[in-house]
Image (cartoon, rainbow, N blue to C red; front, side, top):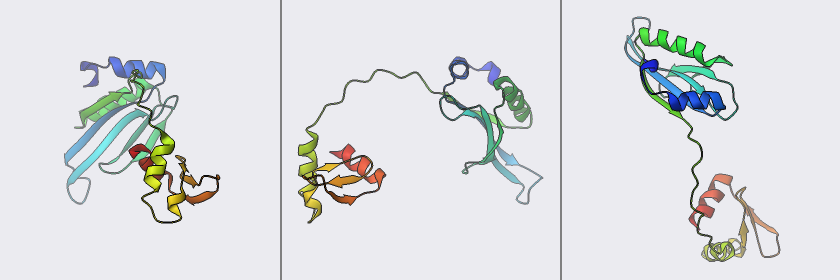
Length: 160
C-alpha cells in the first residue's frame, strides 16, 4: 500500500503544485469481459505544474480516460486503497524533482555550424544561413528559403 512506502517526494509535489504520478496496474483474470483477462491501469496524477490533481484509468497501452479532475489528493489515495483491495498493484510513483543546476553548454559558433550543414545540401537549400526552432530557414538576406516541421528543425539544431 502507498502509505507503507516512502512518499516524501510525492507529498512535497502535492504541496508545491508540482507534477507527480502514482500508477497502479491490474493484469489478470476478469470474469467481466469476453477474454477473461484484464490489462489495465489506474493513475493519480498532476500532469504539469499548477494543474489540478486527476484520476486517469484505462487499458495498458492507451492514454486512458480522465475520471476525476480537481479531486483532493487524500480522497484519491482512499480510492487507490480500494483499487489495491480489488487486486491492483502499485507499480510506480514519481514526483518531479526540483531543477538541478546544469553546467553551461558549450556554445558553438551557430552561424558557422548552420553554414557547414547547409553547404552539404542541394540548391536552394545550400543558401540557408539561419534556422529557427520553429522551422523557418532563411538566407543571408533574411528571405525564407523553406519551412521545416518544428520537430525536424529542433533535431537539426541539436545535432549542429
